[in-house]
Image 1 (cartoon, rainbow, N blue to C red):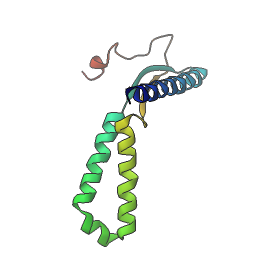
Image 2 (image 1 turned 90 degrees about the vertical axis):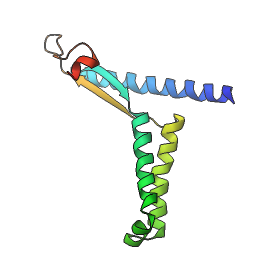
Image 3 (image 1 turned 120 degrees about the horizontal axis):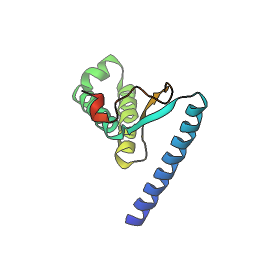
Image 4 (image 1 turned 180 degrees about the vertical axis):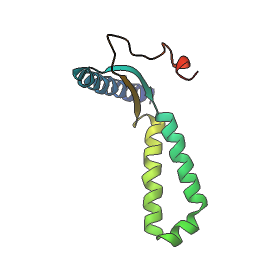
Length: 116
């Protein structure tokens, strides 16, 4: 099983790097620069799990407002991606771009400095 997981992780990493490389090329074409890329996978997983938990906690009310099929569809609609984010099958990236002025991005050098 570890081999399977390693292979899946390696494939996911290669796919991610390919996508980011493609994105970077497109961005540079318009004189933008990539300053930061952050995976939001864990955040999305936690958010979706929270939403599913709240939906389940209010299942009776949700079914009254819609119907059982709609309730189950929405529960599955959020649970599936949450599982995908947890296992690494899904990922979402937030990308910070700048349009440098003579090489100067105008941003602080570190993430910590961005929030001060």
